Length: 309
Image (cartoon, rainbow, N blue to C red):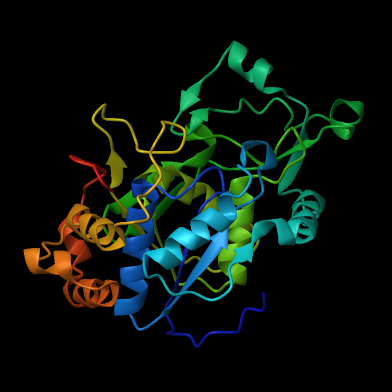
């Protein structure tokens, strides 16, 4: 996919699902929020398939996700598949290593779990391989980026000022996993830059990931987009609605109802008359009434009734 250069003030957003299962309501909410934000800013909305974790991917999921998006009225150019970018990720990781911005790590997950120091994003890496040399890391498959304890800050459009000291709160994190696969944090940074994304709209479960991504953007001298983190959908048990927690596939026979329910979750109040509307009419109403400020400081929201969605 060729990405055209965008004018300085041009808005470009994206939706980047992983093909680990079909589209569910939690994913739909993130897609709807990013789509509304792009359209009301007269911008472009892209779809990126984050297919860089084959062991977790479900056969046919990519096609199912794209069909579901089209069925729900989303319009987008040909999607970017991250699996087509693996050689470029390898080049970036090599550059980070050559510049001393990253290092090889031979620590296994099992080793780290024996005496874990838990932080904002799980186990904080203790820095075991930071200064290791020679045989200790020569054959290591994983690669970690070096962090510092300087205070990182960014202002989220909905969640306000966010602060983190990476080294002490998250630790040196992976850009290549122990199984040799590229890590999410690196791939998303490279492709947000490649696709000239001006604002990332996604769920609040990725707030802490933003610090790791901003750090990599600085290491690689890449621009930092704006960020808007919308509340994550939770089920009756209070847990995030996700494929891992058994979230159900969207009902393909009720796309208007699904879109309107996503509007309600996102703080909009569509009239009853829209239940009989076409998809185009429902989207048109959403573009006219989108007010993301209604979601300010909301990290999660429950989905009260998903019957039929």
